[in-house]
Image (cartoon, rainbow, N blue to C red; front, side, top):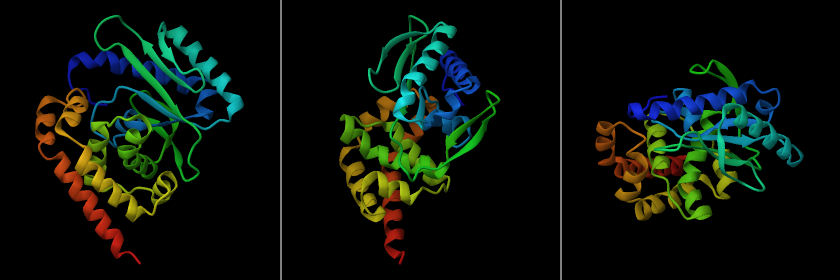
Length: 246
């Protein structure tokens, strides 16, 4: 994973320490499927820095307590303190130092979409294998997240705009089944809604606040000038393509 500046090296090291322990645990890899920006970056599917660890929880409700226990055992062994955590689900904010960026967020999604697909992947930077979302599932969830974060939590992440742009420009394919299940809409109609949302809601402030510490300064200054316009074009073109499909 590329880091924008040397000050991020410590955060990256802590992400990898936690992830190594999760991968080496006898229980956790069976219930925590890796996903999100850090996963994509470690697999070479994305070129930006990522600060959190995101998973899909593949266990059942009876295994939530065992999962929390196993994770908290890892945190203690690594000397990490829990700043905050979910009382019901599996979500943690961990502190590793007292100054600067010092928190790691670990989050899980549950229940999973039935259309999600996964595959074992080797993560070269930690020399471990974890079950990960496929690129098609990950791309679909990035598209869903553009609107979903706003509808669920009232916030918008500029990194979702960047990731959607990057995935489109790389020619990645998305899972139409995941989009249909996740949005409850036809894919063409979802892209129509997505276009309006990006056009009306995405601002330079949103992009700048989220991306200026995830990208090297030169790349950030370049991409911020074209990102919204190009994403709108990509979404419009994809909707047009879908309209031609019989």
